[in-house]
Image (cartoon, rainbow, N blue to C red; front, top):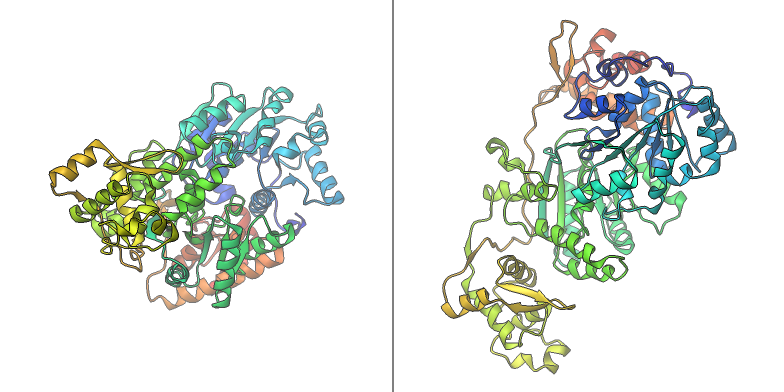
Length: 637
């Protein structure tokens, strides 16, 4: 926290009583709030308990940071990860706002310095973990009579709910802080919360008639795509092809197992890609180092388990690949939300194989609530197996209705881009008849994999022992491959032509299925035989840029990108990124803490000549202009 000592700082009480818009522009360099931000801020300023559900990258931090500067006293922020605290403090310090965190990463002298800053009133915002908050040392510190605690903010508040995908028992202790500070406003922030999770948050944090704000879950700058994952090494080449489309860009690849993380990262490293791994099996030191390299743009690709990402506020991640099926929509949404936090076009690829279902269900045995786990999985399968707009399916899970803009339909997802909104109906009468006949001839006693093996003529020991190689349906299903048969079965389950029963998910035919089989009427379903390379990744149209600032005359100014072929702008972009990376290294912070890529592009497009011109640049507040303005202008000349 000492690397900012030579830079301009804002006095801790400088903005007490000021208007939110003034603080937004002066400190953070933005002129207009994103949807719901101002309503949430005003609710907090009115001392109303507030629950805000906003998508990843939607600007949650601003919602408590601005009230923290305006309100008298200290704001305590409960945050789940050390890396998340460090990132938030670094960003605030770069903007001239002194804040501190209290956690195990501090040595004795650093911890003492942080507590002195709190006691002396120099720090307005204090970050701490839920575990740390429950210690007597911390509670004694905050309970000093002369300290005023105005607000308690709980970040990643879904962790307090057992219905959430990332429940943490330590979060249950946060509510006891209300007894210590009954007058402090309680604020809960999360990116994913169904109605059940929201009710749990309110109850478990003892919130008093809270104002509830639910922003749109739609991250329209992220292109959604699902491909059938190939078998063996072919799946790796699917990943490689996708990475090559994003050459030179930051990306995250999520896997469900540590072993898969290590194997995939090693393979990509051997191929010459800039890549590191991250999972709970690595030492704390290795994980911290690998994360630092990724955050500081020293490496481009991180292969990781779900253990990676909650503490990452890296805005220039351009793509996320899910190598395995996530266990829930919430988990998937959190992971893809790490892409495109700066609002620029990004993409999310899910590689899905029906075999993932069995692996996930195997983990259910360790779950305390198998019924809940199965419900979450079924929602995830509905998305992965969707035959119409994926964004509509995703948002419907969170209770949000989505109608794609006809002008942007191909920007929405792979289905909209390829099929114009939904996969067309295909006559699948013959393969369905073969499948239903095979289920009947195996006496409706087996699951999907076994029935498909019979159709494909497998000579596995089990099939031979059951003498099912002598059935008339043995080996008659070669028009589809294994994954396509799984895909067709998923459709038939959705259409209630088939059902799964018992602990082993045995396939059985419904009355509707028997009627179809006996009537021999044609069967048309939204089914397609996918090319082995998958659906080509779509490129997003460049979105219109958001209005961020005003000129001296009050006229709105748009954040811009340079025109194609602007050689000077290209040089400025490269010089700015090189300078930003060096400056970030000197200050021991990630490059985006200095400023993000959108600011880089806006500078290169507008080519400011003075500090007055810099005030028209997106993301440059007064402190950053004072600290970095001369260096920026020198690079443009």
